[in-house]
Length: 445
Ligand code: PLP
Image (cartoon, rainbow, N blue to C red):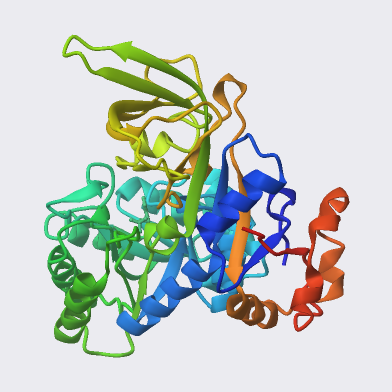
């Protein structure tokens, strides 16, 4: 297991600690001022357990674009998930973990030529398409590819719609594209769709699976024997969300339209796996009070991460983020407030209106559900660093992953452990994990 320098210590949670106590601990022990994340690996493991229980027929191919943190990829690889990659870079990242190319779907219907060549060179054969130009490109660059036709079926309500960009019409376009593929001698093996990210209309999955059935049948008339159904992403992952309804609808639709168990059903979940695993802590570094005509005073809090960093998710992913003060303010009145990022841009507003207690410079705001479409997009605009990630897991998860990742002493040498901080390691409490090669830091708070 390779863990980059920023993620070099794992905080093991016990009965008395939690993500929030680790946040307090990091702030106290590291004299922390920069914003930082805490990633709870146990949350990812529990999501995988939920997935396999609720969607037993559907093999998840985690959408790397959503959060390409090494700890996420390593954990999901160890748990047996497969991967959805959008580019050569993502393919390389996943292959570097030792993942077999057969476990990768190159799910980008419009791929640069060099990326198709790279897929050919590395044996990543399964890839999506939704247009004729792509078929000609694949014919030229990777004629042995196993192609999956992406059809369009949009949820009536989703956090991010994707159908404006990708997916051919199942009735009017797919038959023509399949005929072209056939005439080019290309191997089309299945159908994919993506109903929209953060789907809020579960019945769309039935419509999409039904439309996929029609495309399977059309392909059969052309001599194809389709074997893959890829139901894409769209599964919600934040606190207070559930995939139960979607799973119920998907399972029933699979029984109705794809009763043949030889059809391999896969999906490309992203946010489901990571949204709730990441919690972000930001420092209030400045504040202003503005008197309002109504007599109340509006507080403007400036924090050290903003829309050019992690909160790009507000602009690109249409997320609504909720600031929670880290500490209690007993007896404090709540005031109309806004929260701003650290850059010099007026666009850099994190929360337009929220009621907050009277906070001071140096206080902290915590944002939960920050794991999806945040870090991979973040920039260091204006010179503000991208937050580092602290990893936590409870003891049982640590033991599980130790075994699943086959960690040995040799891995330790690949790590960049900050030796000057080793004095805080309390490994004696965790002697039952003798070969765990990473400094284990026990949160004190
Ligand atoms: N697959 C493809 C092709 C995508 O474009 C996306 C997101 O944009 C995903 C999967 C992941 O979607 P989600 O995070 O909604 O599960």
